[in-house]
Image (cartoon, rainbow, N blue to C red):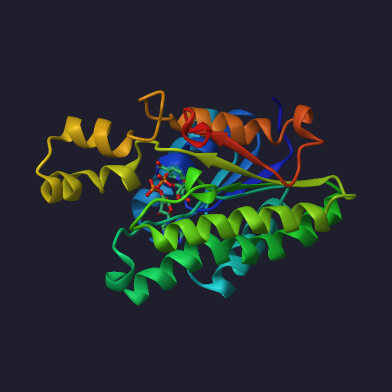
Length: 261
Ligand code: NAD
């Protein structure tokens, strides 16, 4: 797909799925805005390396997606730099696992802010730019946990269900404007977010890494295989292709059969 001349902005895109999505857009010729909250030399280097690798205009814009005003300012900064925003991917996300009575309030607030409310703020800021261009694609990276639940993930499941609902409302409010909004719902992808859960689970259940992967992480994934970053990124790109012009307000599961169970 040729996205030359389009600008794609991706939250939480210096690692994992977000970086994979950014790479797919840059490879397709789009200008790409990377984001994280950290603003390290490494963050800027990731953008420079991706630009060199793909030949696309890739720039890093710091922005803490837990803060409403920062979300909006981040969109506008990218729009100013590139002359607009055509594609918005809401990908930033964090996780915390605990039973409801033990779930720390600050973790709940952070997950709701980063995984859910940021999508509202970035969308609110991006829509005027898309409306000006007469075209826009919004892809929210939700989760299988946007459609089903697991114990001990109350904030994450709540936030991801919220994102799916917000996706539908966004699609309805933009339906006649050649702007679409959809959610991608992956099951487990082996990224830093998931890697970081493995040691604790090994300790808690006295399991080997292999047991944790097969019997805990992939227990509900009938294919018994991780989803890959490229599969999530490819689905995201598809939602920005002409074949998807009439796909809006829906979810696409990339979950190895999880939600068929
Ligand atoms: P990751 O930890 O590799 O990446 C998360 C990204 O979000 C990082 O770039 C991080 O810098 C960024 N981020 C975190 N807090 C931020 C903040 N306050 N402001 C800006 N950026 C922030 O995780 P990932 O697995 O690539 O997850 C990406 C998205 O995919 C998340 O929304 C996650 O919920 C979703 N997802 C992941 C999986 C999986 O199995 N990995 C499955 C389904 C959905």
